[in-house]
Amino acid sequence: MITYEINDALYINLTNRCANNCSFCVRNHPEVMGFDLWLRKEPSIEEIMADIENPELYSEVVFCGYGEPLERLREVIEICRYLKQKGVRTRVNTNGQANLIWKKNIVPELEGLVDSISISLNAKNAEDYVKLCSPDNGEAAYEAILDFAKECMKCIPEVCITVVDVISAHDIEICRSMADSIGANFRVRHYC
Image 1 (cartoon, rainbow, N blue to C red):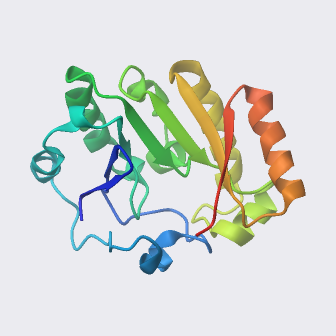
Image 2 (image 1 turned 30 degrees about the vertical axis):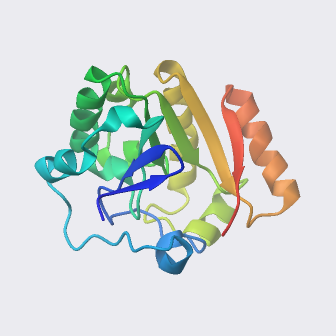
Image 3 (image 1 turned 60 degrees about the vertical axis):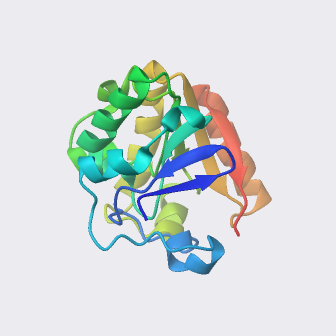
């Protein structure tokens, strides 16, 4: 499934690829969603555009699926250009490791195209992050996420750091303080 609706937003599922294997990830529990987002193959730009149809009917278009959308940076950029021409609000939900994936700072490429970015932090430190999210890049992933968030603060209008409520209330408050320290919004996501 390439696109799906939640409330008044349209979601785009671009890939199954992800640098993490989070213990709480919904892709390990498809019954939670009520539908299967596992892609048999990554859709082409043409297939994605055909599936979008009328994006202006939605409050926003969100890049979020079973994988990390910024694994397909070029496609995100091209689709966002199209959506911005139609006056559509865009959001990317990410694990925040795109700069590690691409081995460069990709955030400036999103400027003017992405209205909002939601970055999953999910832990108060690198050691806890590795235990919870099993990132391919080990403890380096955690600092990369924090650096990515700081870069996003420079050019993306809305930056939100998120955690899933599988961590302690104390750890959630530490993460909230980290978001506050860079001026980002903060949201606790409920584990289904």
